[in-house]
Image (cartoon, rainbow over all chains, first blue to last red; front, side, top):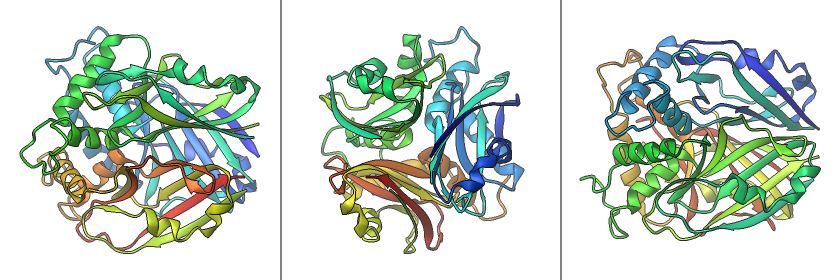
Length: 139
Length: 139
Length: 139
C-alpha cells in the first residue's frame, strides 16, 4: 500500500520547529500500517527537514545560532544576493540538512527513538507556509 | 513495481551541477508510475547528491565557494593526504551533503517543488564519470 | 516483501566507525532480495549514520577532527549545556550527517560502490550502545 499526501504547513518564523504532530494529524491511515516506511519531503530550497531532540527549546535555538555562524549572511564571496541577505545562506543550510526524512513505521506508529522529533528548519526570515509531500509505503 | 538501473553520468568539473534531466532521460518508465518514490544513490565517497535551486548559476558557484571555506584543503589536522589536497575535503563534503535522495513520484513525474533540481556535487578536481543507482518503487 | 528489525549496536567510543558487517550479519534474508532498498535508521539524536571510505582509518579520524572544529564544544552561544560540553555539538553533528541511509539492493547484496562502507558516527564521549531500525523493501 502506497499513500501520498501533500500538506501545507503553517507559516513559521526563522528557526527550528517541531512539526511531528502537525504531520501525523493528517495521517489517520498510519495506524493501519503494521510495517513500512514514511518519507517526508519538503518542496523548497530554503527550508529543510531534520530529526532532533524533541523536548528542550534551547536545542532548537542553539541549532539556529550555530547554523547562522557556520553559514553566515553577507559572506564576501556570495554572488547570489538579489533576494536578500538571508537567501543564499538558506540555500546552503537546506542542502546541509536535507530535503527529506525516511522513518520506519511499526505497529501503526513512527518507530522513532524516545527523544526524536521531526523539525521544520525555516531558513528564511519570511518563508511563508511550506509544502511537504508525505509518502507512506507499507503493509 | 520496483525498477532499478545503474547510470553513468558524464564527467564534470569540480563544483555543483544540475543533472535532473540526465537522470530522467534514462527513465521513460516513470510516466507509468501513478504514485511512489524514486531513490537516487551515488556509488562514491568523494561526490554527493543534493536538491537545490534550479535556475541561478550563482547559487551553484556560491555553494562551491562556501563548501570550500567550510571544509578547506590542507587543514593542519588532516592525515589522509596521499591522494591530493582535494581528497579529504571531498570525503567530508560527501558526508555533509549525503549519498542519496529520495523524491516522491506523482502522476508519472517527480513531485518536486518549482525551483528544485537534482545536483551532482563533484568534490574532486578530476573525479571522472560517476555512477548512480536509481531505484523506483511505485504503482 | 517488507522486513523490519531492530538491532542494538555494540558500544563504541566517540568517533567514526564502520558497521557494515555488524548490520549485514543480522540479515541473512538479504540474499533472497533480487532488487529493492534498505533503510537504516538510528533512533538517537546524538549519533548519526553516513557512508564513506571503507579502508583508511585516517579518513575516519580526519572526519572526527574536522567535525570537532566545525562544531566546537563550549561555543559561547550554546545554552543547552546541562548534559555536558559534548552534548549540544552531538545534536548539531547528528543533523548535519543525518539519522538514516537508504541504499539500493541488487542480487542479494547492498549495491554499494567499491569504497563505500556504513559509518556509525558516535558524537558523545560515552554514548553507550545505539539502536538502529533496519527496513528492507524488495522482491
